[in-house]
Amino acid sequence: EPVDAAVEAAIQKLKERADKHAEEHVAQVRAKIVIIPSVDKTERSILNGLRKLKFHCQGQVEVFPCMKEANNAAIWQAYFNCVAGMEPQWMMKSDGPGAKGVFARSGAIVPIYVDRNKKEIKVFNVWCPEKKKRHWAFLEGDILRGADRHIYDTCRRVFNNKVGHLFGKDWSGCFLAELPQQAGAEPKDPSICSFVKLEQDGHQYPCRPHFFLQVTEDFYETTRCYEDASGVIKLPQPQGDFVKWDDLASAKRLHLDGTFFMVHDEARWVILEYSTGKLLAEDTRQLRKENGDLLRSQPEKVWK
Image (tube, rainbow, N blue to C red; front, top):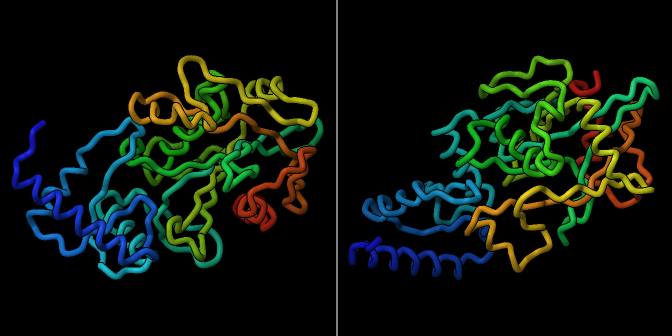
């Protein structure tokens, strides 16, 4: 819709200042954050209008104050303080030594299968094919404040989008118990265990909430039907229209049309050696270091 000429002029000035600041501060954080110096009250009211925008990806624009010369850590902390002030449910208490309240910007889901006959514990993980990753990893995704009410919603959405939808199964068809519906509620079912790992040097991710959840026999058997000779699960393509991770030419459809995005095409079940925390697998491609370190540390809350 048409915009008043005065507003257009103000937007142009904001853009000029943002571009100039970026040129003069090349070392400052650039991860989806734009810094505009010396914003006055009128300009702030214009920028606040961005908060009302809706996106197919279900993301959200936030406008928050920070120091012009702030370093990366200070910029992210300013963002966390702003969001937590409006939506305190994103603050979680970390587990283990040095426990404290920190902002949770992502959630990790770790499906577990207990084979009572073989007395084995198996862990489900997915292959991350992106050039900068190329490793096996737990299922993990960022919070989307335009879609998620709290971290449990994040976990449900991430699992459904990355795995559940591919097999045509909802949450109850995959796990023995549901995650809580209310923010801050602790999972009570013995088939669910949470562990919030404090990140000592993480500016963008102060903590990593992990949820270990026991899967149903049906989900385990269904996924194994897609295994190859080396135990790698070739994930089925979802029903309906979708865009695959390596189809760069069609990537814009995610944002323009809201087309489903297939993030992974491989997964696996690997045996967890309980006495050491090591994962034993036939496929020799590397596991994400942080995931391996967490299991080898054998956190008491998870292991007991």
